[in-house]
Length: 277
Image 1 (cartoon, rainbow, N blue to C red):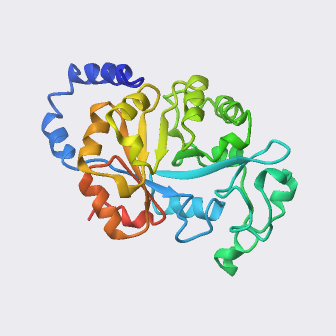
Image 2: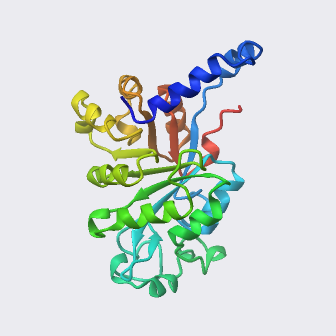
Image 3: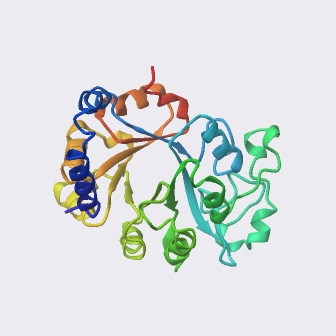
């Protein structure tokens, strides 16, 4: 049984026999027609501001996304920092591997000018900065990027969450994910009440056997949208997992995933995922 299922069943039982349940029954049915799909701003609203910067995350909040997605790596001296690539070359004015820089050296890089002059001086943020700035304002989807390069990274992430009581389900929305599935098994052991997601772009991970294995420790199965089918969505749901797909960079892709019935859409353009229209 999925690790969140028992807790959910308890809540459902309580609501079922609540004195208010009958009073709101008709309204619940009506609202149920508007299925909730989480709008996840990929590296922040990265179509509009430099990815994995405060500017991109602030833009996502203003655009009323449900989550920001962040990429966590580690500096040479052990600081958890947010950057997607394992080198700094593409998104900063520096060159070299992330793990070869001290935090002070990473912090001195310009992480905004590549996107536009108006973003000059944007810095690489730290994991703790983002937790402190945004938890309670917006959900945070935390991707451990190449954790195999940073031994002990999982323990460091878990410690930051525990320090803020974000390892408890009653707190603000936190989800952990990675392409490194062994890392996610480890995170499930370290913070068992935090939802876990597995990332993949491989159809080999969509077999019945693979999905069954993921469901023993994961709450989300998060594939690239090129391998999403209605059958896959139904399989994932049958195993009491949710499905979030990436990376949406066109309205057509967003509409496709909405039609498929996914639970979350991870997008550079939060405005493409708008269920109010």
